[in-house]
Image (cartoon, rainbow over all chains, first blue to last red; front, side, top):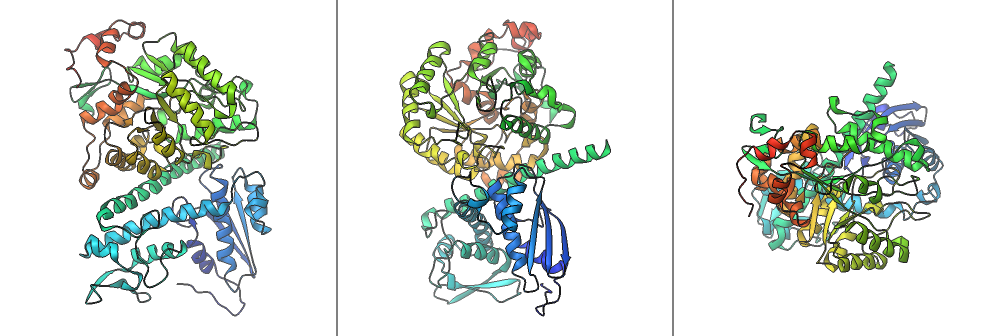
Length: 258
Length: 364
């Protein structure tokens, strides 16, 4: 839980770390803290400096940009922080990214050569993350005994949560029936579903196809498999990134030993 | 499990069955400093080298100098010396904006391929940005080498362009030319983000439109679209002329066996066992250890239950050779007989291995 103070005193390392937990590698949908991209957090009064290193020097500049900007914005959202400085290391575009992020430039201004904007890339990856997270949420509902048809037709208002509780409640059959379900996978899914603007009104279908449409009960199984596939894609890419990072660390150690 | 395997057999022996291995993705490249003309060329080979070291067992890693240029003799030995592969398919990668003579062109590959035509399939390429000249070049490749397929690198830089799409009008003109000339196998590289090429140009979605517009062509998506395995599988599930090339996914078998099991399970579930083709991506990885790793890999019990698929001998026979043979009109039985005394078998004393076993049952 956040321990931040709002009286203007210095932020703590724990608060900053909490904020960074919320920043994900957009391709892997995992926290940059868990992925160990954060090398250092320095706090000097109301100024925070964060050092980041990604698995490879050529990780997509667009992804690197998103992570650096998100880290800056998360930290600067703390009332006690006046300015966050992000320094990306060992990246082939670290100069452009560090300058752009710390001078509040847009991606297009930081990378005049890039075709297309970063928003479209982000939206596409957010959609994939939504689909992958939906898989876990739906699995939880299936395990709680709900059937495909019920889940496909479920609306946003059927789900009731209370803060901090481990389980949430799902109301089905015109609210005649309540089922307790684990809260975590549903929370995680809803966070991404909200970001992608698909599930906001009480009447909205809670779950969607990858294309964002309500799920036809007949194709429920196929949609669910596509969620699993999105997860496998992300974790496979995670395996590649992880392997490349190990190789890089191994090389750096060898160099240090020389 | 290694008791079921005899790597010294020219035909790979697996649980007593002969498995004919066609390595569907090999290169003969030159990334020597003398050949590099753009910083991108150096970054490109360094990136390859990182992939190589990441997914190669420690004792089998090359040093960067041998990796830059290994030459034809070494390639023949790596592929066929311990009979890891029986045949291989060259997939060119031109990158002429980065390398003076190109990185791995059809002409460079042809020197070795024409020396051992019985062992190699030689593919060509096209680039729609070359316009009329490009169409002529494609015809030349067809006339000179009778290429049965093309490797396409949609993310290749050319001048100010950072790539092209398979579903644009110009590309369709080239695909039509392929169809007219009987060049049936189209291998778009849709792989991991490789510096310094742009991510978007490796987007796999353009394959969808191309594949449905050219049902007479086969689209073998290299690297199974990783990191877009999800988009790739979804497209392949709908387009029956879309195939998956295992390069990059295969070496997961060596140091990420659980991931390999999961990726293979997904592929088998979405595409089925007839549309997956093995490829080492040599010299990214070396078939002399990779073939065995893939052949020995197992799906976890959990994945077999979840997906209802098997990585069994029948499936391996298809993925490791028969599926490529089908696309490239290779008669495996005839090849087995021819390899009893071809030059390569003589060079590496493999004759006994091709003749020593009882005749293999005909494949149906």
